[in-house]
Length: 326
Image (cartoon, rainbow, N blue to C red; front, side, top):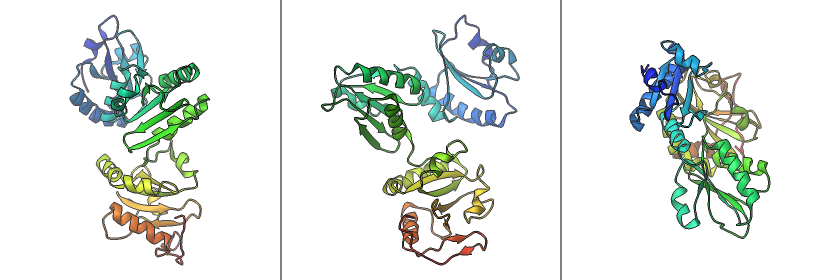
């Protein structure tokens, strides 16, 4: 852990600084330290520091830290922002840059183009000149979500007020004129920010299991495998998004699911289609590598009835039939 606590906390007001507060015996803290080292290297900023609260309990008590790891950004004026995102170097770096920019950036349409690429998700308001109501709701929305996305106000793009958003990770754009209520704005943010290929967690799994769509599980354990899969499958996920969720499922966190979908217990990687409507499971047991082309062939064979659903009790296939909606 880093021994920089005293220099950071000796000032009457905190310097603008990005701080991790951890305990070395915590698995989560140990995992964070790996990413924290990458963050320090990428940002090259002496104000990015880490405290071991076992070795330095005094500053952690002073900061009223009760859970570990805790990640906070302290500003010169005494403000403090809590970090709520993924504990990954890239995401933490993006958070720093968001926190140091205005929570709403105002521009005109002629210069708005470059700002569309400002962040992974950029949400842009185009209110009519007299639509102060939307302007105020949008500002409130930006304050609520400024730690996760970037917000821009630009000139009108049509004869009514509108919102546009740019998901630069999945290369998707959405536009809406449904801007009359706070809930409409909240729903639009969710539409814009939901990843095309999410990673299932205990916190978000209900969101995807209750839609009625089938789920194509890709099991993996490393971040490199997961990101490589996202890049490879993104065009296919867009093509089938109407009735199929492409999802990444951590093989260690969800090891109990592997045998339930017809894959080998303890496997570190694999692919299986789960039909949420019928309960049918279709494990990918082909020798061919998991590529976009091979996965699409697999899906088409299921649709055409060429692949039998896996029978959990017998561990074998059932009578083949077509599956028009996977």
